[in-house]
Length: 246
Image 1 (cartoon, one colour):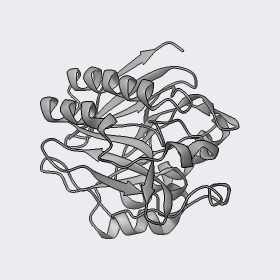
Image 2 (cartoon, rainbow, N blue to C red; image 1 turned 90 degrees about the vertical axis):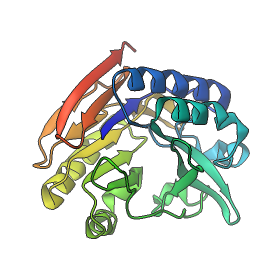
Image 3 (cartoon, one colour; image 1 turned 45 degrees about the horizontal axis):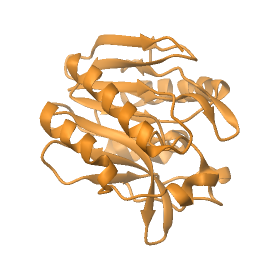
Image 4 (tube, rainbow, N blue to C red; image 1 turned 180 degrees about the horizontal axis):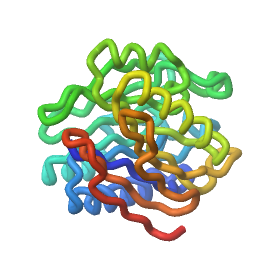
């Protein structure tokens, strides 16, 4: 499967503008061969915990209908970050929009202490099965730092680990070390999608990247530009990158 990880600059709290930007990136990535496009954590709203309660939505929110239409038309799976309204509260989640299938959420199962006042634990699943790739493990930001998360994915046969994050430049360095270690320990390629621009009380550090199964960095975007990387998980090779100057 050709997987695209996108580095975006979200507009704070503006779902409409962010959805439109997602659509443009999906088209660009699909035109470049991507069969799956993964965005950073809370990409549809920006990483804004203090605003999350007022921005929370469901995966069937009609504002996502345009992205679903793109998924159906272009035969591409889209993973977009959103504050998910649940019966227990607001969870950090990824809306998975797959061609001609019901939408489903992947919920963040481990929260950083700073997130606990604003979010509840989400409901996730160990791996995402696909017809053309080894099973895929999804991680949302802090989850990648929890050893049990990667171990559970490995036990369920994950062949690729994809992290959707929102991290500062310092956080990108630490995440990179951890993700390279996951790649080496479990012998699977690892991808990370991060944002740029202002987020909550920090600046997104970019650095969206791909590591091979030996933990070697294959490619990494810079700290300020929007863009994407496409990686083929079947032949385990880079396909292409695209950068828009920040």
